[in-house]
Image (cartoon, rainbow, N blue to C red; front, side):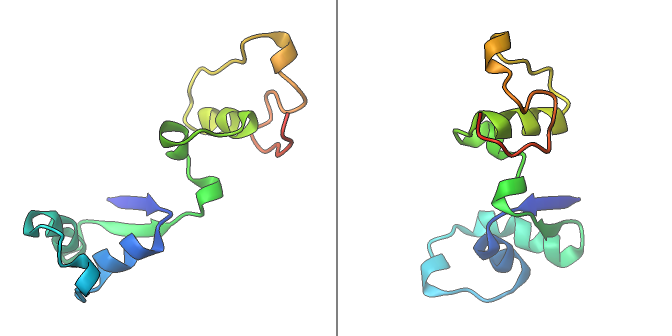
Length: 98
């Protein structure tokens, strides 16, 4: 299984067996991911925040990002009205802030 993440700190923590003073509070049961990475069941791949489609579920985003991520997730997303469509409607690669 591949997990796409935009947090280099969490990726590094899962890949290396180093524990630092700021990670000592993590409960042993949460080291499950580290074990799975070590066994080769999980791999991490870095994805820049600007391309992280999971952000549609966790952050307020500009309209063009919502549309782009909705298209990538194959969601049936449409603006409220024709006036909301703007120049980026139906173009997931558009970067204009309409």
